[in-house]
Length: 111
Image (cartoon, rainbow, N blue to C red; front, side, top):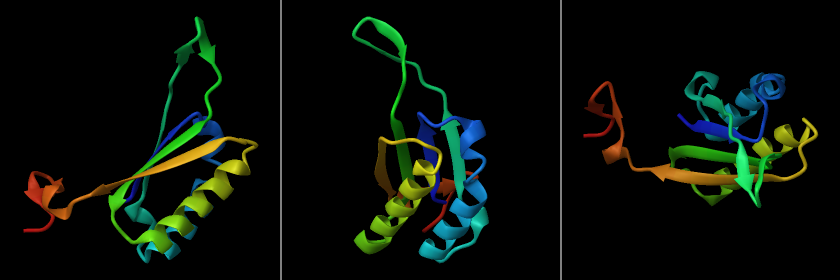
């Protein structure tokens, strides 16, 4: 944990930065690189009667709250790595999980 879900970023592009991205995020979050999952979702934008319009990068981060300073550093790091891929418009949103609502293998993490 954290979980990062990328839209508007091709997997073959993202793979080129995931190792260094995970290492930097692990330093920021004070955890191991194996705590991160990163997934690319294919999405086809359909609006204005024109299917297949290019998408901007939209990245959702699901994690346990770590405070505004860590969140800002995390967002800046993700933004920098995705921008290296030539992507100019990048949006990042954080979803904070509650420990009492998080289960692994059917068992609560905290309880």
